Image 1 (cartoon, rainbow, N blue to C red):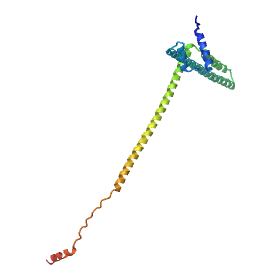
Image 2 (spheres, one colour; image 1 turned 90 degrees about the horizontal axis):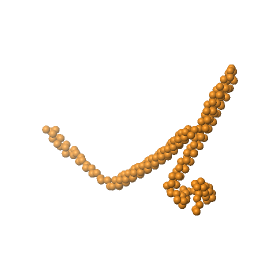
Image 3 (spheres, helix red, strand yellow; image 1 turned 60 degrees about the vertical axis):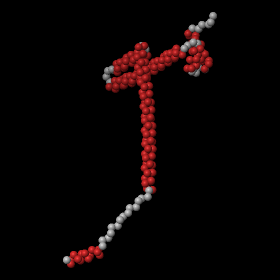
Image 4 (spheres, one colour; image 1 turned 180 degrees about the horizontal axis):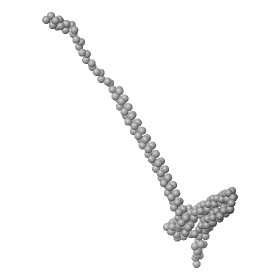
Length: 218
């Protein structure tokens, strides 16, 4: 008869085998898929199990973060109440008269006690709501970080495109200037045609004098 193992025994055997094989450093996902295939577990079922485990781990981390944050907030509040109560006692002692500061201290202590019950002995519903709120905040932080990375990449890409456009524009202007310079150099090297200036004939003053004398003799 083949030996049979229950679920807990299988988990413990696999855990010890992993520790003895890898020294407790962990197993790669591909090795885990191969090991599951050898015992008849499909990759889809293994993937669902991995997702469930990651979700539970994430929830446990969020729950621990919520408890830590609530306790820190409580201790800060308690410290503030203590300072306030001491201040009231000092004021009461300085002004004299009947003692009234202990009533303020009693009220602050009552508020701190009620808060301590909610912090150290919360209900499951309250913890669940706090975890959901923390999960939304974490998701918004991730989205903001992703948006900032995307915007930084877009700004970098825009600067790269502007630099490329300026480089191409400068290259085009340089090509046009070179072409214009070559054209002007070609015009300067051509022979210039000489302009012929026709000299106007000088007036013959000697021939005009007899005619003028004849007009006078008349």
